Image 1 (cartoon, rainbow, N blue to C red):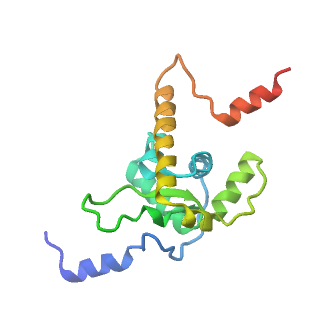
Image 2 (image 1 turned 180 degrees about the vertical axis):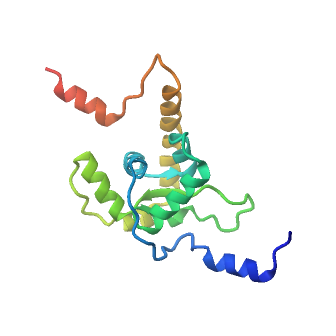
Length: 170
């Protein structure tokens, strides 16, 4: 069945802007939301595909919708440097970073000092080479974590856990 032009106009009106936050209802954070914030705190920048890899039991579509909700609520940010003007390759997965509320949440759960920087400004100032470098590191680290998760003979130990273990040794 073909849609009429009126249906399409209504759908376009409902769609949110990609790089401008719209008014979002208050959201209730879940354990997965907190885990997403932790991963972004450790990696600085992640693609939506990275986050999908880290949560294999969640539907990729639902997970991307949740990332969108977290973005519009301010917990996550989408750096504008990812916009590829004159692209002939089509849409790319969104790149996410921490927003100010996400950085505060990250510091709360990692017992790190509350950040004094405006993370939105930091994300705006990040240039494409820096973001791409961080994403390449994330490709390696998340690939390693996924492989370790699927095997019983090795375990992935993140830097925070390793430092805690070293600090408690006599």
